[in-house]
Every structure is written in structure tokens, then in C-alpha cells.
Image (cartoon, rainbow, N blue to C red; front, side):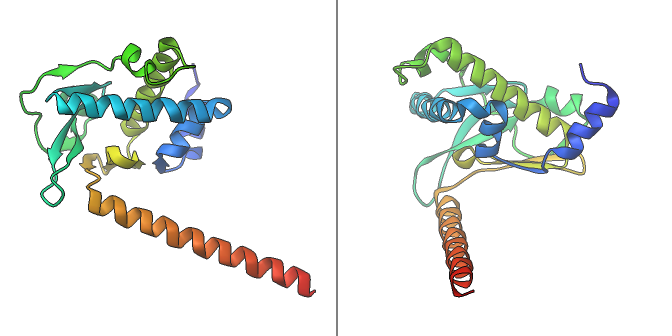
Length: 198
């Protein structure tokens, strides 16, 4: 258990914006590649559940369902926050209420079948740690968590919200990342040239 002083220090040191990559790395830096593969297998399993009209329990946070994107016609993951989670942290949630749909637990055995060299125990250990950390980070408030195709989880001023990652927005973010990387590469080349010219 951390002391109150250590807890405050940890909260101060952790970034206000978490991406999926930083989340995976923070759980176990030595197993980043393995954990990334587990997450990808989880997304595949999730898409199979959506095809069968099933929603998925996502730890303390709530339930992942889907919505039909009006432009592409694709099923886009959508998070319905748990009323219990919001009450526990005194959050205001003005989003949509979970519709009556069959809900399943995350099936570690089924996910492991997509991963020849990773056991269901390893899958379960990682997924439980990931969901627990996401819930803890959101519970602390004043934070964005970008989960790529699983959307943007946001909490500021005690109000919690969710933004789905529709295909058009995902494409915009990919374009932004490409431009940003191009600018970084250009800056690096300029710096190298300046070193050579000296």
C-alpha cells in the first residue's frame, strides 16, 4: 500500500493524457510486444461478439457496445459507463444509458486461441491489469485516455464522457500522425546536416 504522500506523488508524475501505447508500456515494459498482441487479439474477439449482437463487460468502467456509423455503416465500439462507477467517484455522466442487450465477460480462453505462444493465464493477467489501470486512471479524474479504435475516455471537472472513434476521425488522426512524423524526420535531417557542416 502507498502512503498518502506517495499516492499524491504518483498522481502528479502520471500524465494527464494516456494513449494505448503508453498504457501498455506502463503495465510491463519488458512485455510490451506480447501485451500489444494480446490487445489486438482482444479487439478481434470483441468484433466477433458485436457480430453476434453481444455487448462486453469492461471491468468497473461499464459495458462496451457499438453504434452503427452513419457514413460507413460499420459497427463502432461505444462505452456505456457504469452508474456504480460514476456514483463511487461522484462523476456526472450526461451520456447515453446502456440499452438492454446480452452482456458477456471477456473470454481469456477464446482470446488465447488467436495467440499460439501465449496462455489464457497470461491473457487474463494482462487484461485484468489493463482494465484495472484504466478504471483507476479515470477514477482520479482530469484525464484523457485514447484507446484508438475503442475511442476516447475523458474526465474533467467531475464530468465523465466518451467519444467514439468513427472511421473518418480515425483517418484524420492517422493523417496527423503521418504529418507529425514527417516533420520530425525533416527536423532530424536538418540537425544532422548542421552537424556535418560545422
